[in-house]
Image (tube, rainbow, N blue to C red; front, side, top):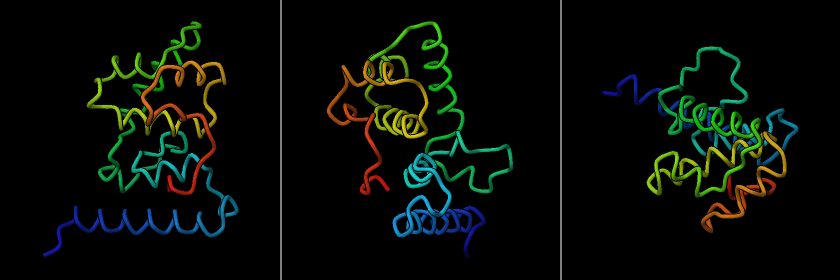
Length: 144
């Protein structure tokens, strides 16, 4: 018998496929930003596009609103003080190498949503592992 959790997960995957395939076919004509498409394709809660409505798929996101909020708020507070950090600085602050993949996806999503200035992104990628040294580039098809 199919459980409610399995049904929600199946609906989530169907929604994800529908959104990403339509974006691949029609591009931004479908009305979704690149950052939203990236978030959906990579199982991030769409933090910057969320408007407070209850999301029935909240349990399906591999990267939660709380994780994104914690990192983005820290970067924002420090950026406003004039403090800029490299990727490795942030990685050390937020869980080390074991959290690298999540941090890369959160930062990539943040960049695609046009958050922060060029100076911050240049500093961030100035000292980063190879998989994170190009966070500040346009969205590629392989990312969705």
